[in-house]
Image 1 (tube, rainbow, N blue to C red):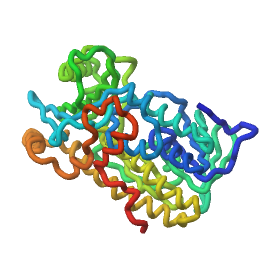
Image 2 (tube, helix red, strand yellow):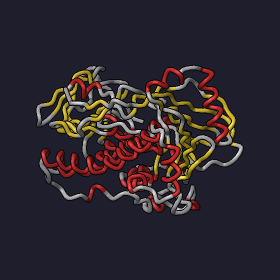
Image 3 (cartoon, rainbow, N blue to C red):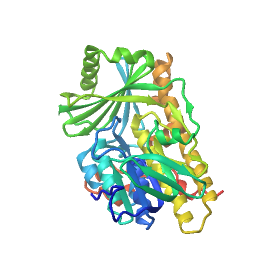
Image 4 (tube, rainbow, N blue to C red):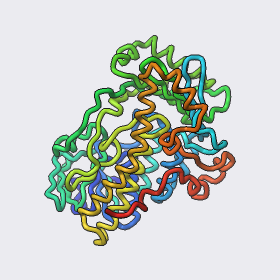
Length: 413
């Protein structure tokens, strides 16, 4: 993969779009814009591949969006595990969700180190996309018509449009004074990768609901399982106890008929559902967790970020072509992104309520036994037939995954 640094003698310094953050939402937007011929500076302080705390379930909705944006996802899908349903366990009972329409693909469990690299490589393959990795935007300035970024590795670049995709703790959003709404009930935790053996084939994502916390379990390879704890603050200190963690990991492995050991140290998670910013602030567009971070159950956080990237590309390309004013393009993005986000915010509210509510023992069986609420059905969606995996990974079955409307068709404001 090509990598450019600010000190390069032949470096381009003026771009159509500067994107800070090269994780899923930033790289997917860069690739989509780059394939259409736009010049993009893609900046991230990290080097890839790298581990990232995540539930690591990529939904069929996100897969379909990446396919529409032109990404070849075969390498990521081949390394992962397809899943066809979601299950929530409470006490000695478990409840199936999103299984009312037959055995259809819901997504794939895949490690973020693999997924992020595949999407970043796809973006960097575009001749007009310049990755600046291992460097950060030390100083960001904007004047409403353009932006300039002083890079920590040296040099200055300018762009017509600034996009922040640098996470919930976005230092750049804070430095620019972009308002943020803080939740009074965020979730915290830790994420493990376990390596071992599945005694039985596993094709579901599992969420184990406990008193004040949840355990998300996602198979991410033939011999690997992601287990992520998410808890309200009072339970976080308790989860730091090594013996407690061992017991909870053993419980998760027993549910999925898995035997194994943690691979490396756990990664800290959170706060989740803690910050929400406007997706447009003046001349700046925000993507993914930089705008709003969501409960990662069923890959909703990744799905939300990728759909925001697709919507942003659909609004920015007409602007760059001169067919839409910058003001209307940003207003268009704000409207479409807000409409899409409501579904995923609702799903997050539901799962967070199930973690905290004493009534979950009554609510959960009802939700499972009856028709799923519209917000859940839309967020989880349905996909391609089981026998389409993995023989027809490309566009054939991805084109069948239209569980959500195409938000790029919403009329311009």
